[in-house]
Amino acid sequence: MALSEQYFQSDELDPIDIVEHLAEYHEWEFDRVADDQIAMMVQGQWRSYSLTLAWSPQDETLRLICTFEMEPPEDRLPAIYEVLNGANDNIWAGAFTYWREPRLMVFRYGLVLSGGQSATPEQIDRMIGAAVAASERFYPAFQLVGWGGRAPDDALQIAIAEAFGRA
Image (tube, helix red, strand yellow):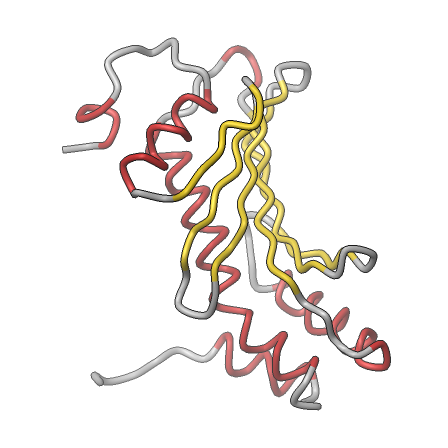
């Protein structure tokens, strides 16, 4: 049964209401910051990710920002930016950026719902899943470049390599 069939009876739900229901469903820690914004923590394999989703009715966009702390040595920042660009070349939905002042790696994603469209729970769940999956996929590459001294191309090979066989 689809999430929308199981938990949502109205087509008139605000996108942030849907996110709140999804957070409850997945048992994620969350805080409804405002009527149009929610913040939550999602546990990944490598670390916990801080996600904020905000609805902007002016441009009809649901914005997602997924962050995690990343404090590489200053001399490794050029390599971090290079591996970040390489990661973005391998992602079709969303993109990474590095916020230098708060020292955060950020994954941003926007779901445009122009013309009065409504987001479905499945779309929002997939949006959140894509952000966490991208962060999990490229986190080791960012770490290898920032602290392991690895070249960006070498570190990216780990993130984009396909696993074969069974563990």
